[in-house]
Length: 427
Image 1 (cartoon, rainbow, N blue to C red):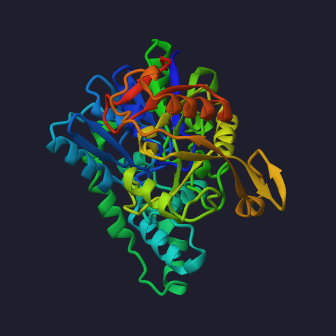
Image 2 (image 1 turned 180 degrees about the horizontal axis):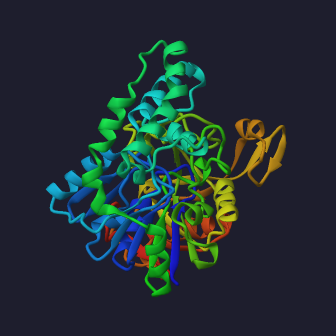
C-alpha cells in the first residue's frame, strides 16, 4: 500500500506543484485533500508553464488519475475555467474524479468572504476573497452544499434556504448589502450539474480499493503547515488542515495506510498575507530574494514576503506531520550571496527558544537568532547529482537537513521539470 503525503512545510508556496508533478509519472493517483482555489501550483513542463489553483498537479501526467477529495471545497466556475484552459492546451482532463461529498463554494460564500474581510479593515486576516473560509464554516455549521446535492433539486433548495436565512440578515443589517435570492443561487448551481456528473465518484471507495490493489497514491496538500487551522499561526491561517492528518479525513484513507510523508521546504522562507514572520526581510536581500525567486503568488498575484530559512518552523513541521523526507526547492535562488544567514532559534523576552512557541503572542514577538553559512557563486541549475553542487552549497543543504530533523531526499536547482537532484527515491 504505497501511499505518500506531500505537503508544504512552511507557509505555502514552497514548490509543491513541481514535486508532485515529478512524482506524478510514478504514481497512479494524485489526490487534493483540502483547501480550494486559494491554493496555487506552478508546474513547468519543457517550455510550458501551467498555473493550477484547484486541480491536482497530477492532471498533467497522462498515466495518472487526478482526484479532488471530500475535504476540498469546489468553486464550479473555477473548476471549469481550469479544465477549459488545460483542454485548450491539449491536456486530457477526462480522468479527473471529484468526491460527491466535497462542498461547493457558492456565490454567497464569496460575497460573505469579501465583505467580511473589508469590514475587518486593519484586522483583516488576508484571505484570498474566494469564499473558502465561509464555505468551511457552512460545512461545520451543517448548512453547507455538497456536490451530490446538485442531483436533488428539492434538497438543494432547502439547503440554500437554510444557509441564506442567516446570511441575508447579516448582509442587509450589518453590511448594508442586498439580500441574495434563493432561486437565483439554485438556478446557478443546477447549471453546473450535468457537466460535473461525469467526474463525480465515491472517491473514498476508489482510493481504498486502489491501495488494496497496490496502486501508488499521492496525497497533495495545498497551502502549508504554518497555515493549518489547528497547527498554524492562528488566526492568520487557512480554514482547513494541510498537515498530514488532513489527508486521512480529507480523502477517507486510514492513517495506517500512509507510508511516507514528504515535506516541501524552500531554501529560504516566504509568506503571503498577514501574520507573524520572524525572518522577514525589509532590505535589499529581501527584495533580491523576491526578484530572483519570482516570488509572486500564483493564486493571489500578491508579492510574497521573503526572509531567510527558518529551521525552527522546519523542525516544527517535521514533528506535527511525522515527516519522513524533505524536498528542498529553489536552492538556485541563493546563488551569489557570499554569506547566507539561517535562523536556528528565536529570542523571546531575552531568552533563547529553539522550538516554536505555542503562544501566539510569544511568536509575534520572536526575534530570529542567526547562524551564517558561506555561500557560493557557481551556477547550479545544471547539477544532476549532489556531488555536482559547489562544496558550500552541499554544506548548506547538510546544515539545513541536520537542523530540520528529517533527510533531504531531493533538491530543486531550477524551475524546470528536469532541474532536480534526487538523492533518495520517494517510492
